[in-house]
Length: 350
Image 1 (tube, rainbow, N blue to C red):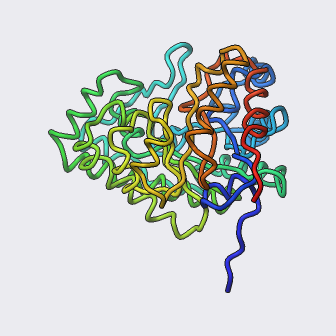
Image 2: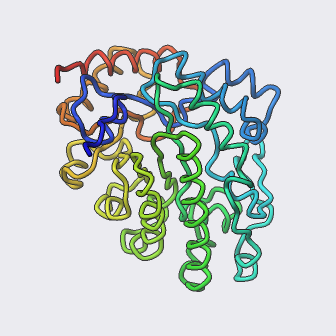
Image 3: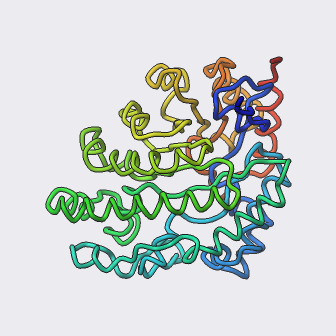
């Protein structure tokens, strides 16, 4: 039986199929740079928005309705699965996520719950269902989760870190505890992503926010790669495109590819053509405008966009995105202009 090709431009690009223009979406495309979102945040915390499916749906759709991105991404947070596992999580003003009961011993790991996403994260899955229903036939929805190393670093450090000393200490000094924690996180994340796909997500992205900042290529290969790979191996059965994004991973792109993903995200420090030469033709690439470029005058912004499109060279398998998340004070007009410029400058016949 012939497999039907995907119709959405974004999904076609994920599969390295010909497209008539380069699709575009932004990481953190729903957020504080939008007045509509700020109005909601006046009444609700981030965790409250994530806990109320109707609000998460509303926020997810805001940038789609305003800018015409080629894909929506679920409004959620990578740390949400940690809460039903028994973690006391707070988003403190000006500090970001704070974990009040960090995980640093074998006993701590043993006390973590192995959750069931359909029960413990039902509110997130309900949001996926609502969003998918709203977008049906118009725009694909991307689900996502955090990679095991990034989740482990938050758990162990108790929040963001500059040097990851506690994480590396446990990793090296208690390898059996590390392995048990990482396998648990890999299982939880794979289950969560499969549940999102079952609820209607048409693609997924695995975010590894900290591996590139914290680990050498050798350490990544030993302490992080097997667990991200385990996730991709478990979810490949679902048949949806998978995106793997690790910030600062230019020095070990072959290892990111080995870990898995149909699409490899490149941050703004990695030129598209260089990254593609390293990765080969078996995967698509996503990226990679510097988020700060969105603050530039439109003529300069256009040149930067054109440069990325030129490096991508209209070859199948490029999704335009930022090299990391959009910044909270980004001018809204420049977001709209970027979407329009990418669509216009990348037009081609297929």
